[in-house]
Length: 330
Image 1: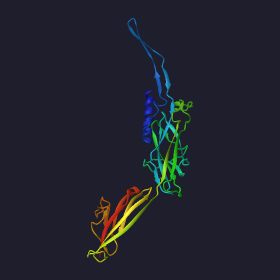
Image 2: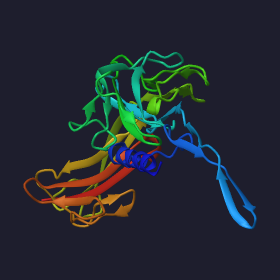
Image 3: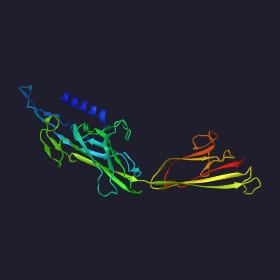
Image 4: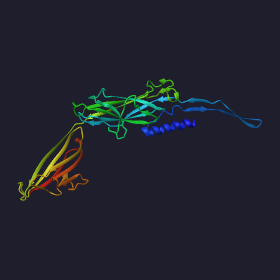
């Protein structure tokens, strides 16, 4: 009995190393475990202690088939025409025996605005645990590399779709991953005689031995505008563009729409026949240093004189970003 328990433990450890440990708890005692019981009657005869043992009865724990599929990624913002956009799922074996699972996906669901187009292949194992599709990830081939999971073990999967081109901002499309026990599925209590671990019966658990989860794509269009204005102050207190006069530029950058303009960077070349006024660079009224440092603003004299401001990810909620700097007319 101890040898069987040690073997079961070794299998679980191997599964954790390969797939990771899940948070869901498997269904009780591992399938194939023998539960034995022997009774003992103690008595005395003529003052001498005696004991009689009963016969040993044994039962082998049957296998419960259960699985849980959970979505790991939030709504994914995409643009019309994007290719190979992934949703992240986790499939966890919540049964009490090792089980292989068949994976299927569908992107033709009711209640959304568009149908994502499955890539080919459409399901990948997240082999490098990066959370997105990369060259290291392994494509899933039904019947060839169905994930074999020990109790409580999980595998992380990527469902990959292309996004149709003719869509508008705010459209939503959904994609579903389904996992089913290869031994069989059905109403809870369905029995597959002799098909469980150690030739025990396999019994469908509360999940029906299959599970699914649905992820969502959101068409997030964004437009960025930049409006520039200037004021001139000459050495005589007027606004004539004379040599020695100062030109102050103001640029207002704003994003509109439901998406994100990622890693927005402002660049403005210093006009010919002018000289940048050191220390004049500002963002939203706050001064920025001229050096390339943590504040995101910088002035560079070579190879082309210019100012830069790193604005980061911009959304409509970011509001207008106002940049100011000054030059003098040579």
